Length: 224
Image (cartoon, rainbow, N blue to C red; front, side, top):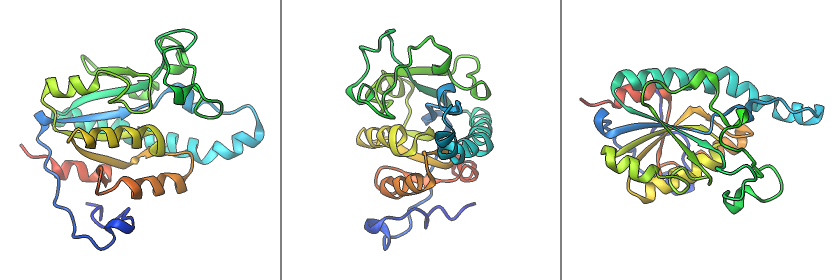
C-alpha cells in the first residue's frame, strides 16, 4: 500500500491529521475513465512540439494506458460500475461546444463524436453494457447526464482516472465533490502535459475535493 495519506499535501493540509481509509462498497462505486482518446496520442508534426510532448506521450503509453487497463480489469472483477467519458461535439461544426472549447489555443477542440480521433483508445474499449458518455465541457458532470446516471445507479463513490489532471480531471472532480460524491483520483492512472502541472493540481485538489491515491491502494479499500 502506498503512503497516500502523506502525499500531495498543499499548504492548507500539510499539518492536518491523516484521513481515514476510504470504504468502497462495489455496488456504490464507479470507476470513471476520462478522455483517454485517440486525438491525445497523436504525435505532433512539428519537431519542436514533438519534443515538448514526448514526456507526456511516454507517460501515457508506458504507464497511464496500461495501468488504467489493469485498473479497469480489477474494477470489473470487484463489481464496480465502469463508466467512460469522452470529450466530443454532437455537431460537425462544433456549435454545441462550451466556450472553453471554442477559444484559440490548446483547448480549442473540434472533435465530432463519430470521427476516429474522438474515439476511446483501443486498449480501453468498453465491454458488454459499460456506459460511455459524451461531454461537451471539461467537467463530465456538467457536460453530460452523468449526474443522473450516477444517482440512478446508486453510486456514492467515484474512482477517477484519465487526462488531463489539471483540466478535465480537476473540473470533474470538483463538480463531483460539490455534489457530495466521495472521490478518489488514481495518480498513476492520470497525466497532465507536464509532471509539474500534474503534481501541482493533485496537491490543489487533494483532501478537499478528493483523496489522491495509487492504483495499488484501490483493492485495499474494497468493502463487501
